[in-house]
Length: 135
Image (cartoon, rainbow, N blue to C red):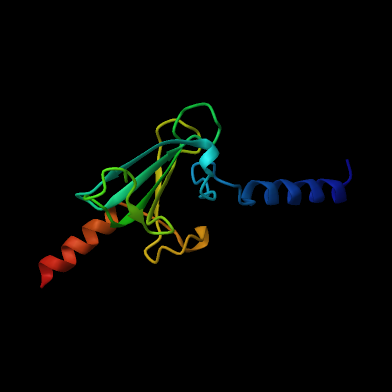
């Protein structure tokens, strides 16, 4: 093999080794599924959220969940089982591989655009607690 080819192969190997690869651990947040794959819907009036569970693959295993703010509940109308909720979710959970490894996002403005939802890290809560103790 000539020196020129050896140099090209070496350069290609070096580029291949340092080229960034996509991480499968960090699955992007897909759009909220439609009602056709909705598995369950429950609300918790104490925390003020309506939870919706979806099976994006349609196999009955929940792999996507949302939580919307409850705006009002009509307790005096027994025929109304569904609370009035915000148009878009506050929280999103996604288990891309259906292996129990859930990722959580929060959309503090509740815009409904996945680009506005940020990955939630439980350590964010620790920062808030530390800041409140400093007061």
